[in-house]
Image 1 (cartoon, helix red, strand yellow):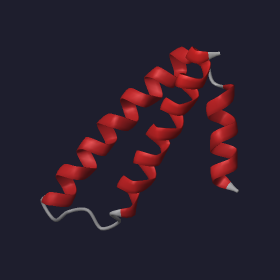
Image 2 (cartoon, helix red, strand yellow):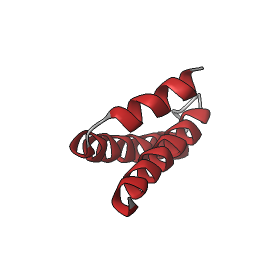
Image 3 (spheres, rainbow, N blue to C red):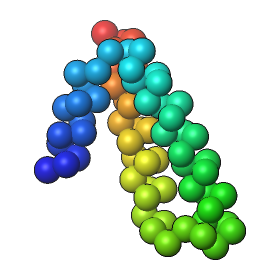
Image 4 (tube, helix red, strand yellow):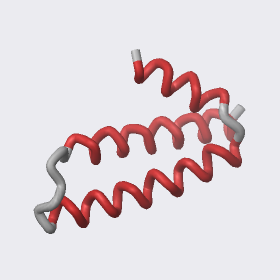
Length: 67
């Protein structure tokens, strides 16, 4: 259910909010990757979840640009 809610929230957000969220999420992925390679990250699934969130945001932005 949380994925459906997340997609709904993404679709309702303004393009400015999506761009901000995209930057923040990308930065978070970078930080998590550094923690992973240094051995400090316990839940590596977080990276996968954030990558999917980035993909959802980019998909919505592309849909809006083409319509």
